[in-house]
Image 1 (tube, rainbow, N blue to C red):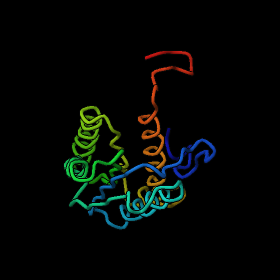
Image 2: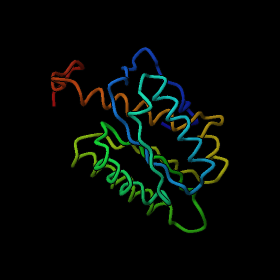
Image 3: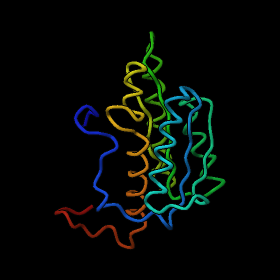
Image 4: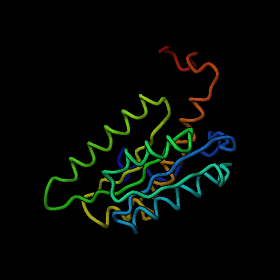
Length: 173
């Protein structure tokens, strides 16, 4: 759903599990620092809001968004997190570099999620210009960092269920 139709920071807090026994990694791109640090602050604050302990949140910075999957793998290997949240921002420029970077990062994080059986969260903004990035990093459309944190908490909760294969919504896996 387009963020113009749904605020990235709006979610039902009643449906949020406690993050008190969860461990998180956050990988933040240094490129577009003003944007990515705003994403990080919102992500970190949201994890804490839902009970995560500061000592169970480990953060590293990587040079750019393209490096997020490798940074995520390194962080996973050293901290054994329940979920790794990757935050970046690739603003479309004069060339199509953004398409290559965004596709590579999305594919890399998907492969890590499948191979390691934990969620690697795609918290990457893919705006057309800097104003669209600001609008999604605490501006009029909320903050993608909040969405990334709540997604991580919910996915870890699913992963920790003793028997998540019993369907409650009408179909089975």
